[in-house]
Length: 282
Image (cartoon, rainbow, N blue to C red; front, side):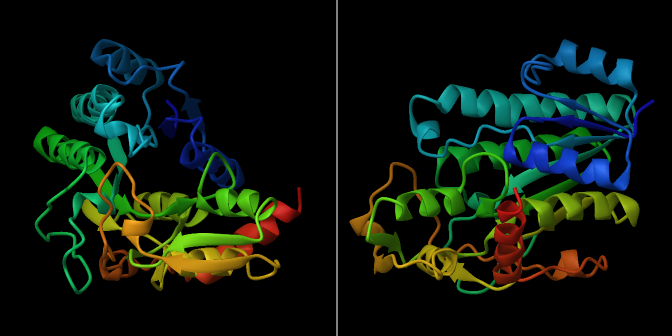
C-alpha cells in the first residue's frame, strides 16, 4: 500500500506535489498520462487495486482553455469529465480518498461579491463546463472527496503567466495586459500544501476554494512580476485583447472555508516573491 497516487504527474501541479511529498516524506507513486490513461476505467481500476493508495491526488486535467472551444473540445470532455468520473467511481469502490482540482471558471464572473462554495455554477466556456461536470461526477459517485477550486495558477513547473511575462520582457520595452478581469493568483506550492493539509487535519469532505489571498487584475499581476525591470506595462480592456474562450470578469472566490480548516494562506504578492526567489536559486 502507498500513501498517495498522483495522476497528472507531469503537469505543473503534479510536479509541485512530488516536490512537496518528497519533503514531507510521504510514500507515493507519480503517474503521467503515459503511465495511466484515466479515460480508461479498467486501467484506472487495475492501477488502484495494484497500488492500494490511501488517496488519489488528481492533478490530471486538460487546461487548454481556448482550444477547448473547438479543436480540443472532445479531449477536454474526455479528460476532465470521463477521466474524473472514472477516478471517483474507482475511489468509491476501493474506499480511497480523492482530491480533485477544479476552477473559478465554473462561475460566470457576474457576481459583485466573493463567490461561495455553494453559489450556483454557471460556466460560460467549454473548459468550465467540463470541470463543473467533473465536480458533479464526483458528488454523484459518493466518493470520499475534496473538490478544490482554484484560479490563475503559476509555479515552478510548466507554462504559466509569470514565465510568459518574463519571456516577453526580454524582447519588448512595453507590454499591454488586460485590466478588467479580477481574480486571485495561486502559487502551485500553496495549492499543493492545502491539498495535503486537508488530509492531515481530516477536514470534512466537500468543496473548498483555494488561491492566494488578496485580489488582482492581470495588469496588477504583471506589474508585480516585472516591477524590477525597465519594461512599461500598460492596461488594456478585454475587448482590446480578444480570446476565443469567455473569461469571467470578476471571479474572486471566498477563502473563508479554507481558512476555517486552520490553513494559513499567504497573499499572492508574498507567494510571488517567494516563488521568484526560489527559482533564482537554480
